[in-house]
Structures are given as C-alpha cells and as structure tokens.
Image (cartoon, rainbow, N blue to C red; front, side, top):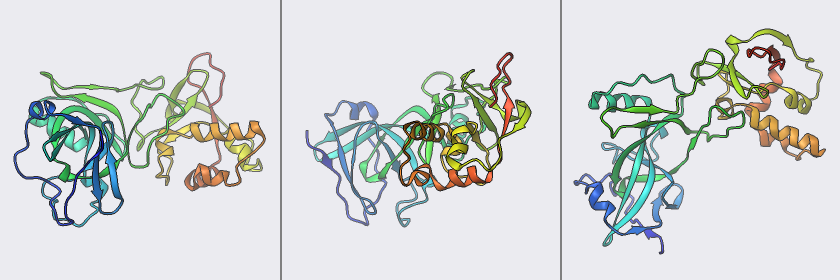
Length: 297
C-alpha cells in the first residue's frame, strides 16, 4: 500500500484541539504502512510503525518552529490508520522524569525513580491516539543496555527503563544494579570502569589500589587501545559516548590496529570530544573489586 500523505499549510495548527477518537475506534480502522509528513525544516519524512516522533504539546501551536527539543512530547509509533481522507496514529509515550512523576501522582501510584541522565526517557505502555497534524518530525530514541561495554546511543534521547501504567499499580522494569555495591548507574553522578573478566561495570568509588599508566609518551592510537573502558561523569564531555562508555570506540581502534590499517580520518570518526578527553587524561588502572579477579580496570 502506498504511503499516505498529511498535508497542511505552514500556518496550520500542529495540535488538533477537537476531541480525538478512542483507541478502540481507531484500532478497528484499516491500517496503512506509512505516513508522509511535511517537515518545514527537514522536508518530507516518512513515518512508519516503530519510529520515534516529536509531538507538539497543546499550547505550543503558534510558537516559532522548531521548538527546543525538550519541549516536544516523544512517542513510539505503533500503528497508522485511515478513516476516509483522515489519518490517525496510535503510539506509546516516552516520559521524562517530571512527566512520569506527574502521571504517577495523578494515578496515585508510588514508584521511587533513580537519578537519570540529561537525555534519558522512560518507555511506557501508555497508549494514545495522535492527529498527524500534531506531529513535528522524526527523532531517535535509542535503547541503552547499561550492562554492555559496547552500547551505542544517539546524541539526544535514550531509554533503559520501562513503566507499566495500565495495571492496578504502576511497575518499573529495567532497573539494573552494578558493581559490588549493586547500585544504579547515573551518568551525571557516577564514573564507572568495566571489567571484561567479570563482565561487569564497577563504580570507581568502589575500586582501590590505583596504578598509573605507562605515561603520555605512548602514541595516541596505542593509548586508546590500552585505555580502560570508562563511562559517566567525565567532566566537560557532552557527547553520547560518555553515557554509554568508551568501549565501542576502543574496540574500533583495536580492530584497525590488528588489521594494520587506520582510516585516514580515524580520529574524526571517533569524535573530537573523545580524542580531546583521551589526550588530556592520565589514566590510572584500579584493581577489580571482584574477589580473586586479577584484572586491572
């Protein structure tokens, strides 16, 4: 089936203030595979189930575009339906911390939320119907596996927690404990190191016996290949790599090193902030906190 296109003038409202149909009613309508939206800054975009989208909240209809990214509501598209010439989108919401706290208060549910990262969202089972006129554009919300040393997430938004709101009591899943202290990882508060022998992240505050590295005379490529896998509150580093960790970048350098060939722009591929961080940092290696583990991390 060919994509269905949403059309509007530049002055058209992004939020349809008329009463939206129920989820049951829209679910019973025929589905379409794609919806084409006219983005005033990016050009036409195709939206499909599984995509993440920016939705303009009520009250921001007449604000200049684009809005600041944190203002938009974020939704995961589940299905697209047609009702004659009209189209409807069914999706589930991503919450930021304050939005979820407000929703829990409204439902009179109590969940203790852990500290969260600046771009961190929480996926939910809260379904809604959205008028395509309220959709601004596509975005990216990546799943962050915070147990892996090689996670890769987008610059802006990611999630690792999910909340169920449909039951009698709200339920939060995905809360992982790390290290010997079995505590949550907060990218804005914690610094962690990864041990490949234990397959586990450790808070640096739980590690002991630091020993300095070989020194700053080591070539940059060698320094990266041998540096510890680190993540978290690393100072003035705002890129996504410091949230997910240095593991993926170190892995790439090791692959290039083993192949004996580095791309001409290899440092650019790794990113300016990462290269600057490595150049400015003198690494110490700590004893792993797991009993009987001899690896230094």
